[in-house]
Length: 189
Ligand SMILES: Cc1cc2nc3c(=O)[nH]c(=O)nc-3n(C[C@H](O)[C@H](O)[C@H](O)COP(=O)(O)O)c2cc1C
Image 1 (cartoon, helix red, strand yellow):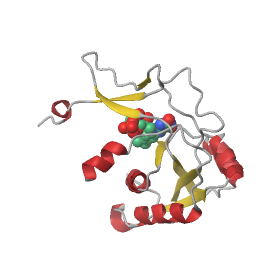
Image 2 (cartoon, protein in one colour):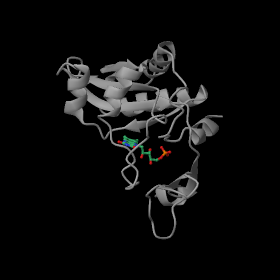
Image 3 (spheres, helix red, strand yellow):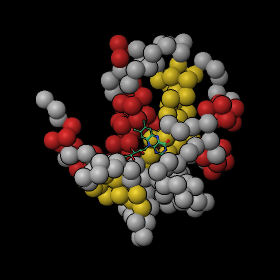
Image 4 (cartoon, protein in one colour):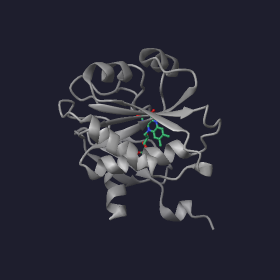
């Protein structure tokens, strides 16, 4: 079952924007992150939640989507995320966040997938712009933005071919293809 959930938990970038996500759902998802592993159990991560169109629009402007899809500027109006969870590192708790934010992000996205939602981790963030737009105090480092919504696209996993190209691509039906390396390639000993 974990494998099924992980297979389903793809990076989605086009959504049914009109499908609202409740604040309580976002709180439940952050609770999964709260219960996850943290280096030294320091738990330095803090979160900003957004599920209202105005706040969502402010966040959307500060994100970059799908760098390999050169001709695609990101989801158009109507296909944008209906919610976001911004993961912050609280420097007054710790200066080192190690991989806490990655673990938190995965817990949240698996929880979203279980609920029939989907999302995308976004690290390409205009951090100064986002900080200003949401008045995020300097003590918080902006680590990741999780875009969330009801997925509107099909994503399929492929094997990396002989040319070794790992770039994802979209076919003529807008199906998104993601090449993954073979197990034998990544287990080296
Ligand atoms: C740390 C991290 C940062 C990412 N940042 C971005 C990003 O800024 N923009 C984006 O469109 N996708 C981003 N992604 C999504 C990756 O492109 C995606 O995970 C990859 O293409 C594999 O697809 P999959 O998640 O469906 O397996 C990020 C993923 C991770 C793990």
